[in-house]
Image (cartoon, rainbow, N blue to C red; front, side, top):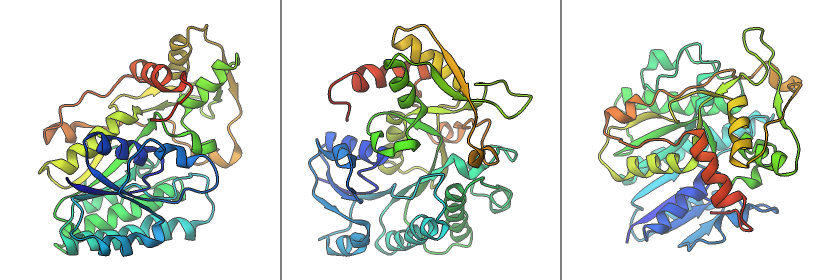
Length: 329
């Protein structure tokens, strides 16, 4: 039986990875803080080999009788409105560097979470490349995106100059992920979940007004991706002998927030009612109006998955999870 370590394993994407690994019969060690709210419920159905806080990560790794099969590093300060940049850097850059070096020293594959936020406004495209010159042109719009980009550039630099690296690694640039086990995220929950709650309560769908004349209200576009597709990619890269590098993880198709809202109403059997509200001032200058993952690189290295459309993804999310007494995976 293989042993896997998942940092951020009680979080949204991390807990879905833990569930998939347990379903395969693997032993899983989760590294995460649970806090005082509902985050623990993301792991309530899981059988775990161990559960420890991040400050004990390397102590637990060094105590294992043999190195884990792979490490999924999804632990991070992911709140895009967090203002303590020192905290963000310590967690998202400092800890990631230490873990990279540990994996290099012990020859353990490392799959880590990057973000589409590294692309900033998308002016330089959405190319999941390790090219140092290209990475230097990207300008993330918030501290979270910058911290992820900082580590991507650090990793790419080390590989370029043939410095120690894990035997296999992948930085996953997740786009707008939605699915079960995100209730604990508060204001950072996906728009899909917020729409379900609004529509189920008989309310209109509340979307941000556009601040650009070339984009109608609700016309802002995102690459919305079902969390199960993200898990599939993460496990596929960890299991196989695929080229190391940065990989976009999305549906490959941009859809507007208005499209998402109409699909949510249709899934719930309601007539669509859209309401447009002002965008918070603190977001306006840092807002991405368009994101779309170029997922051709995954296909080029052999991934044959077909990401769900928002219609199929919302149906699965609403019917299999949110409409049930127990919405957790």
